[in-house]
Image 1 (tube, rainbow, N blue to C red):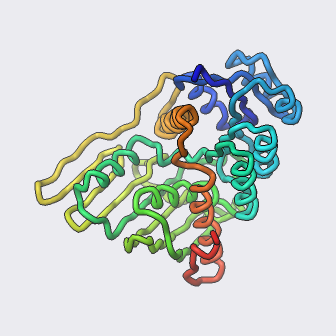
Image 2: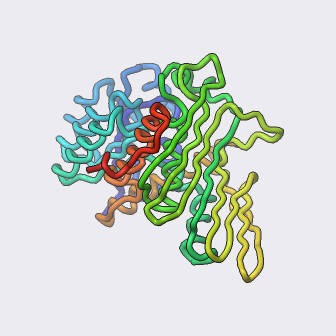
Length: 344
């Protein structure tokens, strides 16, 4: 296939990273953008030299002329835009959170399946270089069968200055950050049977929870802990690193602060630097996430051309979405809850 043409809907805070990444992706380019805010539309259009600019998604789809759409709007508009893409037979990438409810997410997956078009959720954290390195060690069998894990993202970073709307929602850290960490846990240790969660709000200036601790019982028999916090003040700020501990039957993996990967088994121990690349348009400390944006978008293009399933397809992301919903349910009830029934 020749170079694919794409359209971007949503020109907000994070979309700038996606536009930079599209410039680096091999085999695709963005030819049209859409946003209801004329100022954002002009800023992004001028910065990236995009002439086709729309304030209405219906007009964008009616004009066509693109092979896929990248939906980078807030969650409230995701279902209508994904279903619009399905109606026009246009493959779609959708930003996370995928939907407001699991019912909406299921409907979006069903709409694209019925239309015969690919749907991928922009769940980029599993594409981070250090996360991929952990998965590679496991796939090589270096520590045998994993039986326990911890996936930790604890920070005091002020995320609200760049995204003030995060302080206004009744839900915060599980829906915004925990969704990534839960997806990593699934990616590394497999699907989950049950969830036990506890949440807390430490920052009095926000409405939602900013601390969550979640116990996962994986279908493989492994147990893991996902702990996320934006209320943790450390001597060395780790943002935006996810730290990982995995214990296996034959050894251990530790992904520690500073992107150091430690592997210990009967052959001894080794430490490797698995730092992400600092792309030309990236900036520290965001470069880890920024590189993963490029990686997932390249994955989208490659699989789209091959006609193959995407790693974070809509169907796959339903399982991560269910973990988020069940975590909130468990935190509210104080009980362990089953995950599988939610997907049936």
